[in-house]
Image (cartoon, rainbow over all chains, first blue to last red; front, side, top):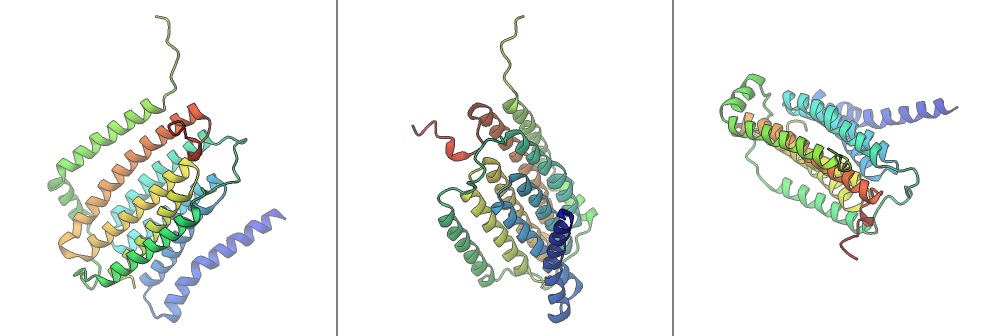
Amino acid sequence: MRAWLYLLAAAIAGAVITTPALLVYVFGGGTVDDALLASLATLMLVSALAVVTMRDIIRCGLAMIVSFLALAGIYVVAGAPLVAAAQVIVYIGAISVLILFAIMLTQSKAGPASLVFQTQALPAAIAAIVLAVLIGLGVSATDWGEAAERVQLVTSELATVLFRDYVLPFEVVSVLLLAAVIGGVFVAKRETEAEPD
Amino acid sequence: MADSLDTYLILSGALFAIGTFGFLARRNAISMLMSIELMLNAVNLAIVAFGSFIPELKAHGSVIALMVMAVAAAEATVGLAIVIAIYRNRKTPLVDEYDAMRR
């Protein structure tokens, strides 16, 4: 009985994700890229909403993984495949696992899980909607001087820029990452009692 | 649609707004960190979109996006370590119960 419910939920989710693609491709006369972008954008926004509204925090973390994956697809559509690969490796492979571990370390069964939102949730929602509308208005009112078509980035070109113009930031970022990892281990380490020497 | 910068920027703005709402409204500290990750992803999407539509920025956009990812990883490491350290002392992940400096 439960398996049928899960199947039904999966079918509904698949319909929600494929509908925008079909609408854009068949009725809107868009290209395949347009259809892909519509589907991935829907998936990303719906799962991001699930991250901020769902009750069970483990499910929030899993929805966050789906959101990151859809965003990686959007990077591919935008013409940056290396960034998409880095997104999968860094965000899905490392940060999501870190966050899931932290969730499992800090949730107690006895804790009050029913009250998910703070008291200022309604003003926060209004502020977020106003922010989105402002960004949308600003974006559509500005002339960015962009090209009419997106460019596909060749990876060797990116490598040339990364290791010629950006060598110093690259090395500084690696040192920063090392410092952050050592600092994280130090902060999260359990303090042991003073050992007898 | 996929050939217009505005699409990506509006998408990025929507994702950023969702992250803002999550950061302001959730009670759980780890939920707030997840919302911060969503906001960083939105900014990254805007950077990549600028890189692929403005010819002078071509490869620079992707390089900056990679740097942002590395810094986001560092932020997640330190933030989660702090949350775990606080949880060990206060036994709760809810931020409205961290009120030791208000009393």
